[in-house]
Length: 364
Image (cartoon, helix red, strand yellow):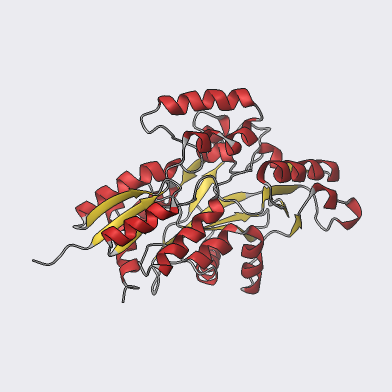
């Protein structure tokens, strides 16, 4: 009887402090809100739920179940912020493949690429993007530079390392602009106040990013229009899944039409309830064709593997701008990637099986 392929599902479960701490306080602005949030999290079965890393907590169960259905032997490993434990686990269990769901170490998402680097140094194949691609995609400035090399349009931008660098006479952007942390993902640091329409407001927002995230701020011209997501699965012959659109019509009229941190992660908020994914998106045939071509070029140019999602916005003239390339996007059963895959005709189990098969193709 053939030996079953052993797939280890590796993730990093955020602690209560991580889930309720720096990121949440930056969005709420109050210590009291954090204290309340920690009480809610501590009372939950998982101990820490929601926020930008919560998808992993649901993903891991869905992925393990799908792997078992597909005939793989599985093990589940919570890295829990301890790199030495991860190395010991890999040395002891020697999995044939890692299904990589690790998005951070501790509270630092920048270490996502370092974890992938450990897999590579230890010679263990893994799903999804490589370390280099993960790092490039998380660095929004580097992403824009690479996309520009491939002649892909992105919003015009400037980077401010500190608020003292914001001067009206040296500003190269047209207002309104949207301000984001330069090295975060999952909409961390993006809220309704991220869109500004004056130099003084820009300086204030850059200060917010600098003080709360200890990193440069990326300011880019705001594209006021539709937002679409293009999911891709595969490598040699990638499949571009049906395009999704974010429907902002449920947002209060005074809210900007953007996917904020609350919209993505904070159930019960107006932003969360008012931003709904719709698939397939209804687009003019030529725009859909362009979006698919641009997404595939971005996927390849950024070095993505196995699966990814490319986010774009359309201006009033239906000009496409890429605003984000997301390697290893959330693939839990209720996430946007799975929604697009279902419209394509793939079940969740089939998605997981395909990702594993693509990764195993790289195995010597």
